[in-house]
Length: 56
Image (tube, rainbow, N blue to C red; front, side, top):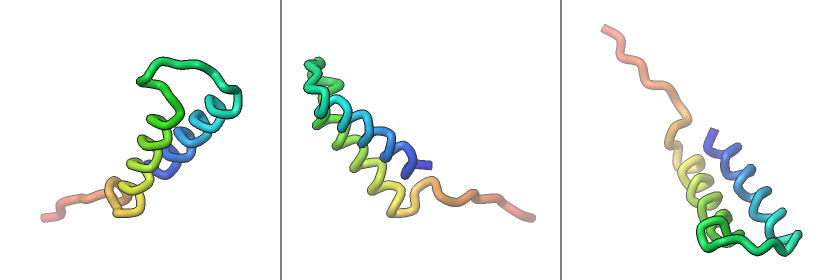
C-alpha cells in the first residue's frame, strides 16, 4: 500500500514539475518527492505489509 502511495506522490511531483506550476512551500515538487521516497523506504523495509493476528 505504501508503494502505491509513493507512486502517486511521484506522479503528482512530476506533474507539478513538468507543468512548471508555482505552489507554496508545502506542496512543492521537491517536498512531494521526499514524501514519496519516505513512503517507498517504509514499503521496502516492510512496514505495513503484513497483518498480525494473535492466535490463542
